Length: 414
Image (cartoon, rainbow, N blue to C red):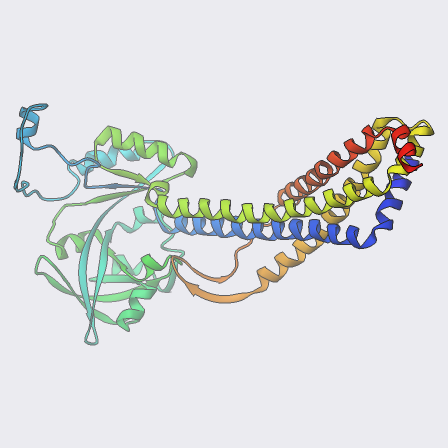
């Protein structure tokens, strides 16, 4: 075995330039895989974490997944009926039998429930009119389904209960209005009701869409302003185990009929984009390792061709085909191992550099640093892929070398 390793090292040293290029190719692939994997997984986890923290796990809405069928369609189901220009019956939106639904949901283990009334309003401050979503909440219940209390950047969440006509604004909405804690706003709704409200706090979730458009007040106050007394149109829910959100939402919708969405369904399009992005990135990085494997294949093939007389001599001395094959496979393994070790160092350094970059971006969520998720498994996966590719690339020419007939080689040389 020691003799085989010595022969393999001698072959690699004999073509030092090509060996170095192949090692660097493997190291580049491994390093980029580790850094990109940490970046992709980190950004996805950061996004999901912010979504989960800022929004409820499940939301029941006062609407149905499929619109109700018209009476004539139900009466003549399957018949030749053409229905045109039908004006749907006007109905007051809101969850019916809301108290019963809330009571039954609160009885479910591991489920926290908070009723809300959500509606559109126009806020005026200093001559600026800004459209916003006003959410009427019950503060004690809301604490259990969102992190609103932790997201407060100014004021006090408890002041919402003790201040007459108190309201808290998203940080982006406050900036758009040019308003701050302690200011008074004029808030009007489509019901023709206008109320002057005092800003008792500003919250910042990190989700731009929420921070720039939402405001919260007491549920009773929102019902008065929106002209919908004793009405709620959504129920927010939070689970002890977020992994069962989709199944739990489906069960609740089947029970009550109202459209019930899990956080995964609500953000399904974005999660699909993240999945496609990961596939593309990992494919590109994997291609780097495959290209490096071709470099190893080229080295071993060239060495096999140039050392055919040496192979004949080795076989004449009693080396078996498997032993000759192992020499050339060992060469590929050495290149793969050396490239992996260098790649680990390169990947670690590249991750440190990416993690130190500071910037400010406001898209769906605001970020100041690239979110990285460093997991030892990334190093193991990169090593397995790199070493496996190196050994596979060396196996083909090694098998060819093992099949060479020493008699034919010596005759050809003569």
